[in-house]
Image 1 (cartoon, rainbow, N blue to C red):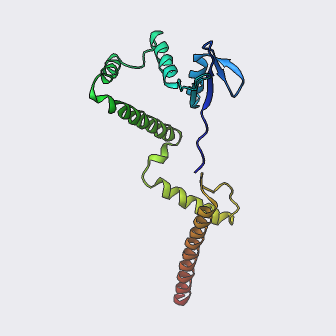
Image 2: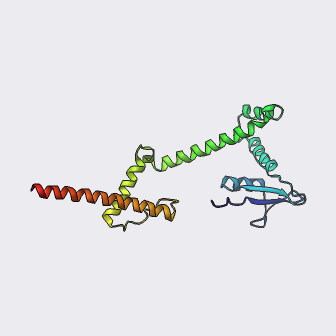
Image 3: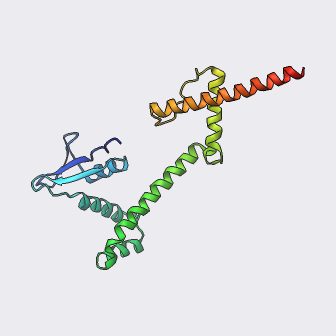
Length: 186
């Protein structure tokens, strides 16, 4: 399994300025929010002490957006978050929020997939696609390009191709048997 990409390292100087170590320039909180929206993970550390300040700055980004009227978190959720810091529920709330956001991301991904390919939700769609690929390959003599599945390893591709050839051989053998029967009768 490939390593996850390293987070973008942002260093905070004593002057409280934030320094992007990849591009060697200073960045703002809005820049950091942009990196995160683009899918990058960030890590913000204090240059002198080495303390991880990521959580503090992410909360600051959320607070700034909320103060500008860009309300994302309902008042009830904010109230429950404050309560969770003073009750035994503190240990449950972070895991609940993490699982909720994981489910949201997964649902969004599935919705996007369905929107891009509405037929994919149809029962039997994968089997139909496999049959179409096998037919196209048989008709073109294996010249149809791009039939390797996305993310498929060489071993998986070889196994799939062997299975497709076995299926074609079986069908050919059945057709030959049927032709032989027809010749006997005729």
